[in-house]
Image 1 (cartoon, rainbow, N blue to C red):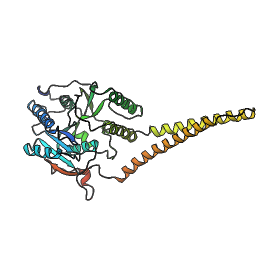
Image 2 (tube, rainbow, N blue to C red; image 1 turned 120 degrees about the horizontal axis):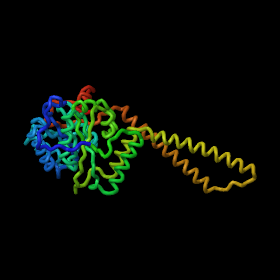
Image 3 (cartoon, rainbow, N blue to C red; image 1 turned 30 degrees about the vertical axis):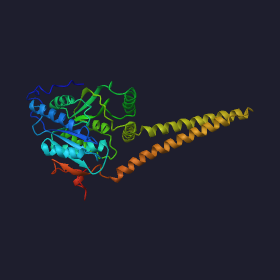
Image 4 (cartoon, rainbow, N blue to C red; image 1 turned 180 degrees about the horizontal axis):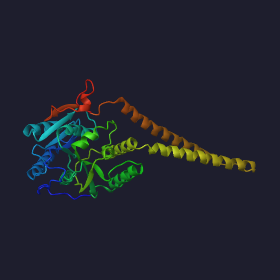
Length: 353
């Protein structure tokens, strides 16, 4: 895991480095009801870009892209005002409806793939330390196409969240999902990686599982998340839904586990049946209405669980087959001439994916 470079020091110069000129960077920020913090977050992001530009790490036309995911407050008004004040530095996308964090992030990355050399994704609350971008760029200059921000310290989390988050990563690994431990959605992706990302057209998005599948040269940068007093937009219910989407979108092992369990119970019943048959011929009376009732309930519950799990996979297949767009742009500020190729190829489609 790499250490973070200092934004004040210039980038390395060598004829053998994969990157020779400062790249155009786009910082993609998904926003949902962020009116109370967005101005301050944009001030910090623009100051970061100014420092990176002055030290030669990124090109002067680098920018911040805010993606409004159907906010119900003044988030879009703030994005519009900041774009008018700095049209080359603050860009904006307003989605036609609330699509969720993963799709809002994808919408921003879709635009970035057509515009810039690399893109960094970060949440609007800036809990992820902005210094991690320095480490991202250092790895990018050395040839990495994808750089993951990995949390090295979870002390700012509650004990419950820390325990459940780490259990989730271990579970995903046990189920055979290729996932980066303690990585959320703070990462850098080159244009090549972004273009490869959009070869994956599934509707059920779990970017933490999709991005590692791209391959290419990858690296990690460690950082510690800053504590925040603001209310999270990712409560326990949404985190559980995201985890469930990740499991069912990237692994069929749960169905296989149900199948194996069914075989185990089937053969156990055969053995018990033979045992009770022998006891019957030996003249023993078989007692146990309670145990019989418990066995019926256990088997009934297991069957319902299996049917529900199969239904979940069938439902996901149904959504994928319908091929509905994952998002639609309502307004675009600063890149109006850019349109997602996969949306443009569909008849009567709005820019989206």
